[in-house]
Image 1 (cartoon, rainbow, N blue to C red):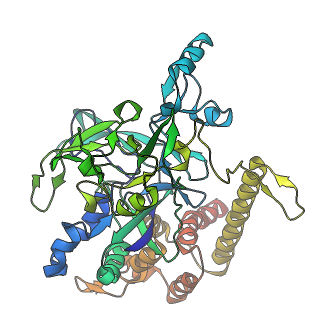
Image 2 (cartoon, rainbow, N blue to C red):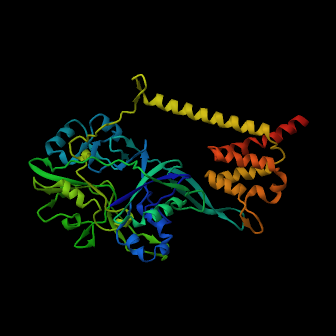
Image 3 (cartoon, rainbow, N blue to C red):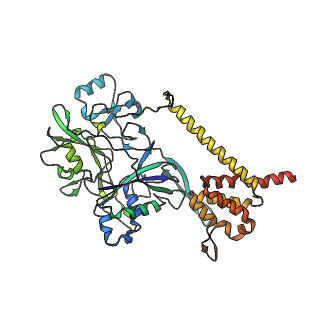
Length: 488
């Protein structure tokens, strides 16, 4: 099996809904469903010809979910088996050893909690790295109104809002394939894809996808033997993604052992399982129609299986590595058998990071100090860039072009990538009998002398070109203001 690891960086806020509904209360995702990446490839469906079925329908190619990255590490949804005292955050519960795997707790222990005045509550949100760092995915909200193009104002009674995932975050995802003959084509299409999610015609949806030779993701450590609880032995399946399980081949919440790849000698321990469910009806744009409704086990669910003492956990883990159940092509079906954080009463992690590192003198550097140094470095970079902009202004004639600088500033907002911005400014491609680049046609062409244009082109070879042009477009018009003040 071949694995291709990618990083998806958000260049703008991204709107990801858990359903295709456009009215009413719509739940939002805190991860990128694998079907989004499958959809990017499906735009080139006809390019694959006779191989299309293998790639898009057979499960031979599987597009995994994208999870937010924290310190260049992949994160995983907190398992629903975790319980903590009500009013205590997940982070505090983990630090104070007050976080419990509920399948280990007995009636006597529950009675003791009641006597202490503690009420345990299931943890349902948050993501975690393999070494125990907690991450909360934040959402932005913006209120908007539909536009009345006839009266040129906002429409009455048409207020709506968007919840979105924030710009600048990075998300890791993996594409698995049984046959690597499609590898180069998949990498090419995904890296050329620039849009993701809903409301792409507005201000949302810009992304940059990069293939990484070396995986930045972390595998979850797991226990290679059955876990003993009260003289009985269990294995625990952690749902790393949504699961479309079956009962006698039909998609169902009441799944059977066969859908888990287990023999009848095992038994599903429903009382020790922690499962949350949902359903959705996917919309397929190319057919302008919906697929049948899907019943899925949510990401983070934990399924307990009663097994024999000599059950071969390692062999079973290898059998289910490809995935369980239906809809594997869209990232469903990924499970981890006996993850380490479910194997003990209080979740434990290897190499738990505490937010500090040692400097060159062996002294421990706190998280605040690390953050302040990062802020100082960013300020130094900003100051250096501003200095370069002011030197450029002093060495070149940038006056009498206030309206043109304003349009360049607009282009900086429309094209967030340096390469695309350069093309928008200087492309010599002929469109409607003139060159497409903004500075090479129309009124701008007459106002900009060749020396200034050559200087702007030359700056492209250096880093931070987009940031340089954007800052230049802000400060250059002020030269005209200075001239006006001198005349007064």
